Image 1 (cartoon, one colour):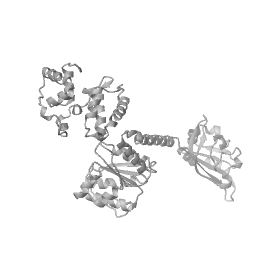
Image 2 (tube, rainbow, N blue to C red):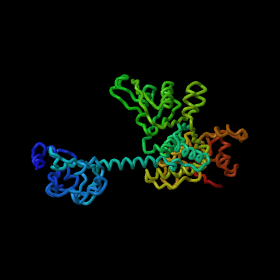
Image 3 (cartoon, rainbow, N blue to C red):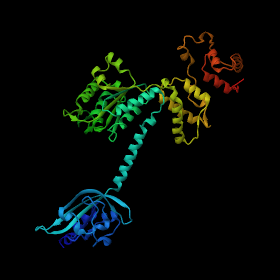
Length: 464
């Protein structure tokens, strides 16, 4: 047959053998006439095994929307003349399914007589594996941002959870205002993964990490030659987030130029790369965050008022840890579980004195500082419980005078600062104060943690 004659041509044969995709041909009766090495790799059958057989041996699960027919003459390709690229599965010689893209064309003579069929098969196994890994990574990322990782049972946190749900169900621009370490990025991620954009990208940019010129290029991209060092085109973070969400952290630190350009993005939903005058439409959801009081920055002239109200369509205020101390035990348990898995240490919790210090401390660094304190304790602790002297020194020896200045009716007149405390002096004070360590601490002007430290150092028992 002409098809067979053509395939005997040395150049064509070499070409087919060099292709990465599987290719095979059939005669007018649907019998396989050639079978390249890539098909051997994909399907597991050698050319000797397949020549003369029909493609039904491969059991394609979808041809023209249904199973491959047993009779090749009944195949729809003879009527349609082609099979458009179709994602389906073939059955390997070993019995397992192989994901492929299949397409086919009928070969005709000048008089329209069918002389054969050429079919091409692209192996999708590696692509499917990569896609599965991406989906798994996406699920892990979504899991990271779920409510379960924003821990809290306090009323303040329940309000935050309600706000996240409401924001996720809308397309409104969100401004998250809170102190450093309160979990603003987690809140932004939770909003994204609660929204209809969750299957697209979440792009995060720290606006305080770059100077104005670099931040402009980072956000908007640039054209080749637009400035020194711009050797090629660059796609900005706004374009990368197209169809998804962009999270702009530390938004209060951006310059007036970036403020103006951001305002245009919010109003027009278009961006211009640096060095270009061409506008590019984008479809994004914008979430911003700051640890500054933006309204005060507006009043002081550092932040545009029109931009402030554009960003503050739906504000969310994650509370500082000192205002939700009932969540501290939950957070402690969570971080102990996390670091137990990382380190292999079997630490069960905090001792009572250590937990008391954690509850008394003000946590200026909020949840981030609390996690760092637990990680610090894991380095030192070799017992089943984290004890007082496993936690960072700044947590257990915070300055007592800071606490006193907040209490005008405190016993400040009875304080006798004495940092050169001796064992005898401490024993005398403990006796006078009936072993009330807090009272002893007030008398000597030290923290209660310091009294615990001296008692442990000098082997003084906890009780009389």
